[in-house]
Length: 133
Image 1 (cartoon, rainbow, N blue to C red):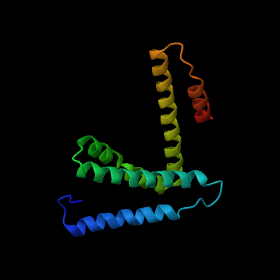
Image 2: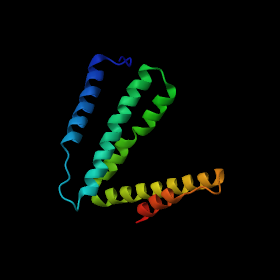
Image 3: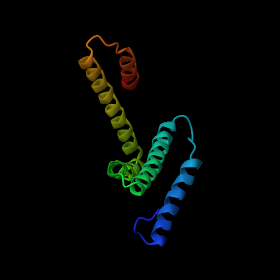
Image 4: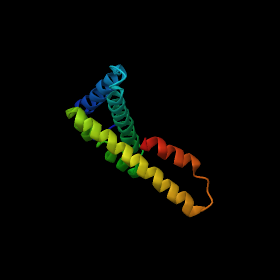
C-alpha cells in the first residue's frame, strides 16, 4: 500500500502498530480487583488496531466513508492517554462508557416502540438493567 509517504515513514508506522499489537497480546489482568482496567486498555488497543486496518483498506479502495470512519476512531489514542494518566481518569472513562451504553439502549427502545408500539422490549430492558447495575 502506498500512501504517498516515503517508504521509511510507512515502515515506521507499521513498526509502531506491530509493537502495539505485540504489547496488547502480552497484557494480562494483574488481579480480579483491577480487571476492569485491563479490559479498558485491551479494548482500546484492539479498537486502535482495527481502525488502523480500516484506514489502510479505505485508502487502498478509495472509500471515503471508510476513511472518515477510521480517522474519527483513531481518536482512541487520546482516550488511551487519558485512561493511562490516573486510576481516577480511567474510572471516569469507564463510567462514561456505561452512561453512553445506557443512552444507546434507551434510544433503541424508543425507536423500536416508535416503529411498533406493541414491540416486546424485554431484551432491551434486561440489557439496560444490567448496564445500570
